[in-house]
Length: 311
Ligand SMILES: [Zn+2]
Picture 1 (tube, rainbow, N blue to C red):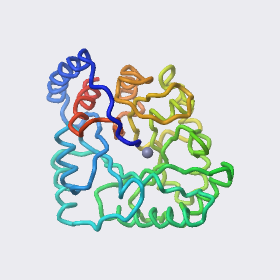
Picture 2: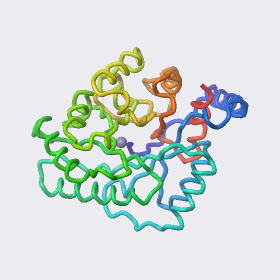
Picture 3: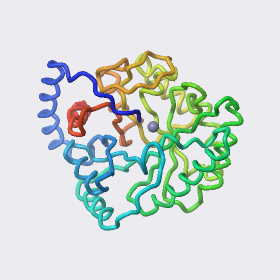
């Protein structure tokens, strides 16, 4: 998830396409029944509460959403309001929601060279896991971290110290490693690095992966030219059973650029066809997809969701 940057409005051709597929999609949903619906939702703010976020998801035709566990730059999480949480639970049941995704703050760096940064990361991670026990959300996504010159091996060792300290056998949450673009000293660009982290965790069954389409394309995995080969690599190296969700973002940056700038679906280097392939790909069926595309306001996600549901 990157900062929301206002970009150009939808091209008139795409706008009319979105309108057409919106109607087509409504008919499709009637024919298909809710059970085969694509599981998709945007990143939403929980500043006005969890129930409000659930209502916003419905407004944009979503059946899930992602949220930050606290301010994305860190800081303290608000105390949970049980009535508000119960309100979301009711919405999720009534509307057959797919699993939600919680996202850790960007400032969480488990493998910093500075002990105080690692201590902060451990504190946030521990608190978030405890908090998620009381939320209707089973997936907790974080960026593996930046080793800041210490090297990948040392970085992974530091990440594993915290994961193995804090992940417990009976927890309901699956901890999700996000695939990264590989900018700077980021860990998690390659499937091999992610595999090494999972291998080192004692409670492996509590681990999972989120593929971010923008990040892996920038990271050197050609999902535009050969999605099948990339997913085969993922399965061979990590195991497709570890894939729990995807971030659907187009990219402003070229292939293998190691730069991370999200773009609206269909407006970047990945293009509409790539997203059509992804949301209809057999081994990805049923997984929750999350949009972190730059939008002027939340309601604009509806156009993207309707388009993706039409495929
Ligand atoms: Zn992220």
